[in-house]
Amino acid sequence: MINLIKEKFSEGDSFFHKLDPRVKIIVALLFSVIVAVSDKYTSLWGALFLAAAVVIVARLRTKEVLSRLLVVNSFIFLLWLMLPFTFQGEKIYTLGSLGISQEGIKYALLITIKSNSIVLVGIAFLSTTSIFNLVHALRHLHLPDKLVQLFFFTYRYIHTIHSEYIRLNNALKIRGFKPQTNLHTYKTYAYLVGMMLVRSYDRSKRVYNAMLCRGFKGKFWTLNHFVSKKADFAAGIVMISCIMGLVLLP
Amino acid sequence: MKEREDKAVIKIADLSFAYPSRDYVFEKFNFNFFKGERIGLVGLNGSGKTTLFHLIMGLLHPTEGKIDIFGKERKVESDFAEVRERIGLVFQDPDDQLFSPTVAEDIAFGPLNLRKNHQETKKILKETLETLGLAGFEDRITYNLSYGEKRLVSLATVWAMQPEILLLDEPTIWLDEGTIEKIVQILNRNPRLSYIIISHDKKFLKETTDSICLMDNGKIRKI
Image (cartoon, rainbow over all chains, first blue to last red; front, side, top):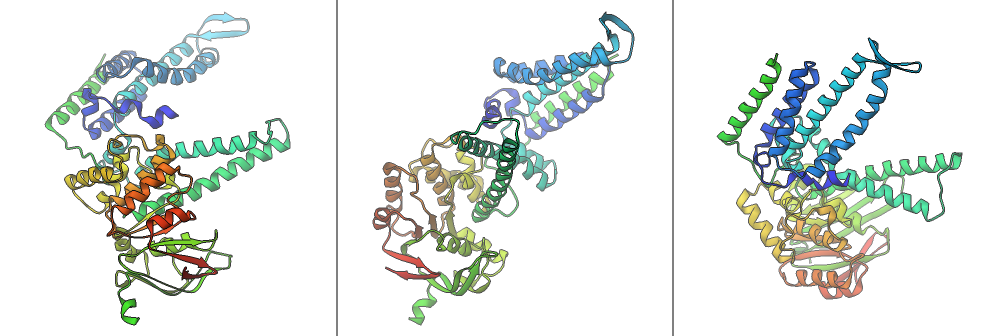
């Protein structure tokens, strides 16, 4: 979570860091949709290749990219445990009473390629934009103000709510609380969650008031403006053409 | 006396206020604040000091009475837009105040809301950071700052709006002597500034204010 808050990938001066965030959002969205609905292997391998290529162009630290992929793939690993055994189809191997089906493996592989391509593109396109610029870009793309603000504040206050949770949890610990399977534990956790809800609500009111006091009238203005250059437009066209190319692959 | 009263920039008359299902915090409360005044506000916890600030900023609304600020009666939300542009309130908890990822963006939030253009905002940003001794803090992440730094940056976010009057709510609480001394210097270096400071720190008030008012039982008086 701290990684997320620090926006580790958002600093840099690669091609993707400089690209207009609006172009990035549109391309990433289009790519994700196409990859998600596609089930042609050639297109998907192509997509994974493109995704890996853009991450390389974005010049991000390999170790951190891999650590993010690890999180995604640990979920996918669970699918590999389940799908080959449960999917209907031709059995290629039998393990005791369980049969491994070819379709199951294919399906798991499909999901693996899709998720990794989308996550890689997300890293290259979206993580290389600071949250303020993303918010600003979303507004320019005419997403409703309320959704944009919801997105932004969720991002900002996860950190504060998390530290509030740690504080409350420490308060429990120093008075000798040990979680067990009993009513006392359930009750304590219920109080903890309840208290966090109440505190978050109060905090949201205070934050909003503080913003009003600084002249907030429902619109966010950003310090670092971005102007769409011809190069951004051209890059967008090229990238969209590549994505369309993926669809047309045999 | 009457004539003097007319010159008050903040004029509160016969104001009553109570939080839901609690006793009145203020009943027939009167208070005048003049340009150039530097006053300290003391009183027991729960005596209504913060409530008074929130009433002035229009975050709370009185059940009865009149609030005149800058020569105009302020009643509904839209009346307070101008007040908020000219009076700056610094909250007690800097985590309520700082919501942007970087110090620069948080400080720019106010001036941008005032529709300052880009160059102006950048200039204000630079000047504010220099005045408050925070030069070089632009790209620091707000939630990674130390508590003392957060307090100074909170002050900076309001300072950047160049308010005519500052309302400071417990600006020294939980701060070390060094940071308190910095705040004393910042305030004293700008003798034309008007402000009200809520504080329990008598030494700090002595160094920064000209007079001290006590809030007690819903009344305010000079001591």
